[in-house]
Every structure is written in C-alpha cells, then in structure tokens.
Length: 249
Image (spheres, helix red, strand yellow):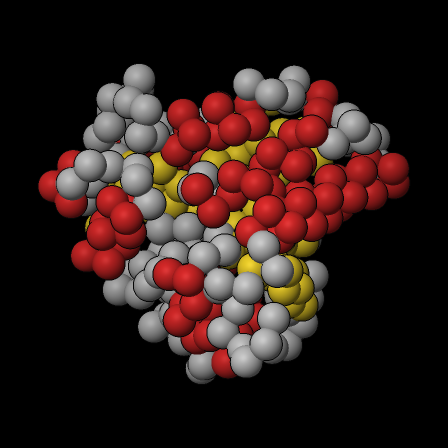
C-alpha cells in the first residue's frame, strides 16, 4: 500500500470521529508551526458527514486561519440548487465555523474561465490538507475512470460523469432520478489532489467495499483512480466494518 495508512473502525460513527479528530490535529499542527493560513480541500458527500461534524465541533482549530476549497461541483446547476456541493459544505461546515476565507467552485457561466480562476487560487500556495472520499467506481473527486489522468497537466478541469458515478448520486440520495444528475462537473485533477501535504479519506458503507479493495490491493491504474493515493507519503484511509474488504475488521 505504499505510504498509505489504513484505520478500520467497528461503526461508521467511530470512523467519522477518528477521521475528524485526525483532521483537527493535522490543522492545529500546521497552525502551531507557522503563522500563515492552512489551505484545505474538502470533499462534499454523505460519506463525509461524521468526519465534518467531528471536525466542526473540535475546540482547538483556529478557523479564522483556514482557507477552504471545494474538491468538485456540478456544471449547470443554479446557484441556489440544494444539490450543489457548495450547498452541502455550507450546511455541514461553513455555517458551523467562522472560516478565514471560502473559495467556492462555480459551475455556471463561463466554465473555462472558472477553471482558470480556481486553478490560479489553488496555485497561490501549497495545499496543506485534502479531505477525500472514494466513489463506488473508484473515482477520486470527479475523476472517474474514463477521464482520470495520473499525469494530468491541468489543475482543475471539466469532465463528463460516467454512468456509475451518476447512479451513485441517486443511491446517495442527492438526486431523485438518474436524469436529474447533471452530466458534467468541474473537478480538481488527481495531481492537484495528491499535491496536498496530507490526505485523510473517509470511506464508510458496504457499497464502497469493492472500490476500497481495488484501492488497497489492485493495480495502481486509472481503472481505479483512488489507487493513486497509495503513493502518497502522508495519507490515511478511515474505514468502517462495512467498507473494509478484509476478512476481519
């Protein structure tokens, strides 16, 4: 598994509590050793619920010194659509803490200009922490197997979502039907995500077990984009008993 660490917990609640506590500790460690802001990329998905709840409730993080970035978002949804990932993060984190600044990824208007704008923001300084999940198809952010590129020259890109990814959005309760799921999205690319100094993944539930197995023990290939995390020196994957593909938890 390279540098990737794995921690398995009996329940989803315990997994989220551990991941959230680890994230808080990672943030405060950076804040203790330097005065500048901590730059964090946040995933937005039900898999992150418990992790973000624990992180937001932690007493030690100086949120005024945190700069937040989105990992991805849909193209074409209205600014007020509740399905937007920015709306998820607003509810589960941004409304709960007082962040120094928030950089939202906008999937309306001139999408090409938006990818350039967001890429410029991301490139101003290194990313300190990336909080991520893994899709049922092994995607990392919206880097699905057909569009994932481990040597992607782009920082942010527009992608077409594959069938399995869109089905997952329905299964997760994010959209009522497949037809409601936007066919395109903006996503940080895999090299951008892996450039983070530390990565913490929260991946609960039985629907993720096959993808976790491929991530941990399959070939490192874009057939399972999340397998790229195995090469990161400071990444930890938090699982519950349902997502752990081993014989025992």
